Image (spheres, helix red, strand yellow):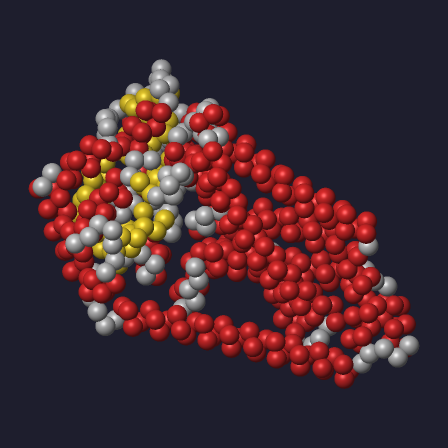
Length: 215
Length: 274
């Protein structure tokens, strides 16, 4: 093991560059999957005909597949039908598909946890269905959703490392390039990667805890 | 209540249709671009028109294609050969672009048109000939064994049912070892660095891959040594999309020129030390 050689400034900069890609891909996927997950979750909660069924089929299919398989599928199979995406967008699309199914379930269960009487009370006091949903159900549900949503975001950030299989230049990928420079680097480099992931993800959980307290 | 639900459904329908339209629009454009490039011209003409060759190279293989973390450039035998070939075909060695490939992504990327050619420690095999066109051999590797010094394994004949052999996924060496030592258990890892670390950690008894790569490992950790010599021939070839006869010929001519003018030996000696 060669800690001094492995932790040269060039190598640390190279790893952090990879981490920027991790953050970029995770950030865009978080935004997109939250939007899509919210639509899917709310549609399933409100039982809008046809769409609720489509949403249910989508969520149940995706939730029961491994993310690695979805990444392979997006990158290798979609070009066969004429949809060709860059490595970065393939990774973002695969993560968005997978995580939105997870988020949809979190959001649906958050909404379901609000007592049915709330909807009835809202409706009988003259609010429309959408108004009741927006002003009464959602605010109560959201409070309960925040902790599981944040932990899902943390999973998403860690899951970006699976895109190493399609050579996305994120942190794990760059770690492998460093490992290949010298076979004595592998353990020191993996320790450093673990430290970087931990710092960022732990900071995220702390932010989530603050959010919960403030609500 | 029903009325409101209908409204919600209408909104969803419109969102969905916009998404579908956007997706179709994007898709059409891509496929049109691809068609106009590929159909009308031969591969060599396309390359000359682009005035650039896009090579698919490894970025995690020491000696052949390895990214330098300080400069961000990929360096190695494959890269230098690709530069020289480009110099002969297009007259300028700066008209190159290198894209990183792995053993898994290289053939799909070639067929998608992401890269013009693969020069990435790729062994010419019958199976692969069905998918791509190969040039002449540009490097003669051979599979060998790496063990910890003092190991009782001295050659391929010592591999029995108790031996755990470490290999790299997607490589011909993993297939060869199953033929040459059918009793041995084979463990396959993602890349060479992980395979070596597994050997060092005692997860297996012997690591097998092309000797040129094993020499690189042995030079970095002198507790390990090569045994048994080469037991296969692994001719590396440069791969092109099926039906690129004129491009294959241009590369073959350029390779022959490099071998006759001494440039090939110069590059070989720079990277491969035995």
